[in-house]
Image 1 (cartoon, helix red, strand yellow):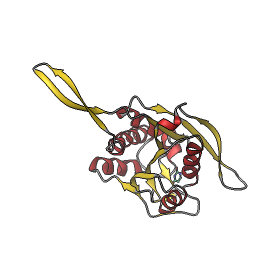
Image 2: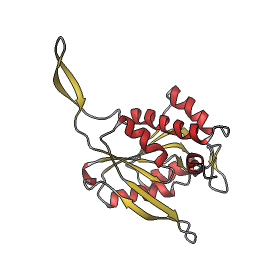
Image 3: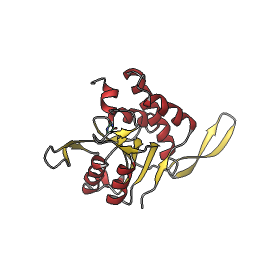
Image 4: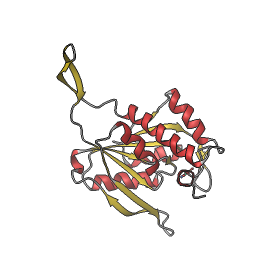
Length: 209
Ligand code: URA
């Protein structure tokens, strides 16, 4: 079973509270989402393997650690996921960025992929899929499926806020995927919004309400 990590660092929790606040405007909302994504990236990369190298300091030789060449990929789910990708890139600037776009079929209500572009060496990379809201889990389940279909073997999912329904859907469909969250909320309402959540993440990020 994939693990759920709710990241309780005080800075993440403080900024998440400001993100939730209905009085936080677009500019500040966007900045805060990016900042939280950076802080979450710090936690999500804890497992990266290190290797020893020797460097010359101004006063001697140091045997010290660097990251041992792990290849990473970030995949924002369009459109709200775009709000998190720059924040992750700030800490992992060498990561490649893929994109995936999904829409909900009005008849089946299932997510359908309309766009995907991934780095060519998919099977060699560890991917972090980013999307602020894990609501029903439909998009995340489909995005993970799309990446796996193209050869991705290691995938993590990073969201700001999840509903229990979304977490359960991802765990049921993809038990090898760990989920990283800033907040795990109470429920979904009848319109599919996370309660208490933060409203529509895409609209708040892009000012389209
Ligand atoms: N997507 C959002 O942007 N907000 C929610 O609460 C649920 C899905």
